Length: 86
Image (cartoon, rainbow, N blue to C red; front, side, top):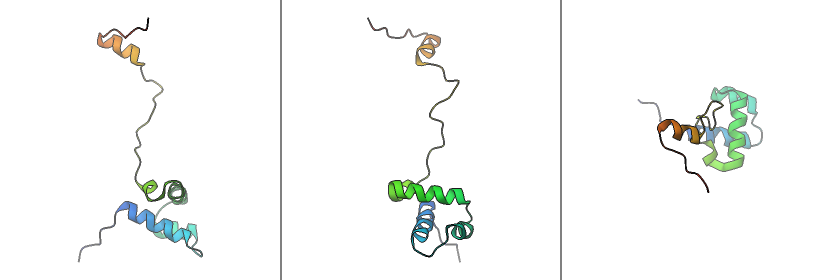
């Protein structure tokens, strides 16, 4: 018999709903779900902020980079002169 398929968001939602019920210990639930306490608190916080949509995986791509080249320099390197405001 195959294992039942459980999607990540459904698993996270199950965790959050158990935490929100009275009488469930967050630390114990984290152990049962095999997650760290900071991860459990992160899921709970995101659920409280955004509901079920807050439990979806987020992109881990950096939004900024300390060594990023400005668009003006990139255009100069590519051989395209930057637009000038007159």
